[in-house]
Length: 260
Image (cartoon, rainbow, N blue to C red):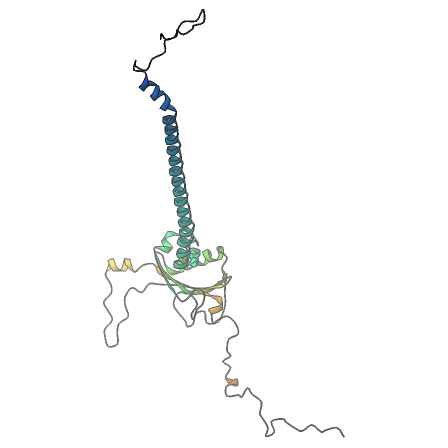
């Protein structure tokens, strides 16, 4: 039986449809499988984007962790540095540095610290030794004027100094501190020992090195200065007196008469 011919509407071109034997089957199958491949491709892109977002989140967390660590280190290291610096350096020496004496009056400075800043067992004692290039009288005037400008007040107290010394020895007070200032000639030639002849005079070159003066500064806490407060009397008339009253045989004294 002959195959019925396809009816084609008038005015429209005829479109040839491939038959089963003209090789169009694989193309159709590929066309039919295209939607699944597109889904696989879309799923792969979504997975790649998710992986990229995950990596970006990890990097962001890593950066935040590094910034937090650096902040903690800086916030802890800076106070620790200044704390150690404060403990190792006494601010009293900064006050002495700020006196503003001429350079010739502070040619060489040596500082020494002993005791505890918080007065554990012994309060802190600050000692400074300075070499001056000029005579002790002029050096003493310079240091006394500098102390007055810096707010130190002249302190006239007994045992200032403990014993008579050569040069100029003055005492000062400011706030909770006391200061002893001793300006004197330098010791150029050591004193001879017992039984030995005095050493020969130093040559001219050595004499030049012995010129100038020596300055000693001692700063203490006022509460640790034994010269503050009432001093013990040394009146010989009080020696041997019994500070306690004489006790009678009856520890209660005379009997009080009872009411009748």
